[in-house]
Length: 180
Image (cartoon, rainbow, N blue to C red; front, side, top):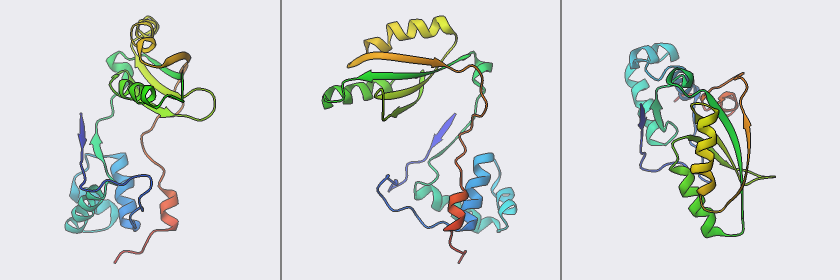
């Protein structure tokens, strides 16, 4: 289950980051660990009363700092036993073909992350499938048929050391404003 928030003005990579104080940073830290926490428990955890805590959460949502809430699912318990890292090589000098490939990749549910990368390759995909046979079929039936794909290089996860969607927040503390 994913709940996305559509802020009126989402932050972009080139926009100025909002000023966050230690309470905002604390809210982000707590919500990354437990997005289902009640507002009263969140307020107690950060040392504020409930009303200003709720206003701060709403502000963080409106600024686009908090972009949504989701359930974390154990992929193995729902039969997705194979995590593959796939480097996709394609022609970079054809803008139209690149946009078509990007759009096609966005539509593939098996691709849980895609990054435009430097160095060898063009894209790095994280792909989840049930087993190696399913990956082989998916590659032949889907991935190789996408526009502008020249070659694939796949590595498989042999074991997860760390998997977290939580972002590091320590760098924010040094520049945090004091609460008003």
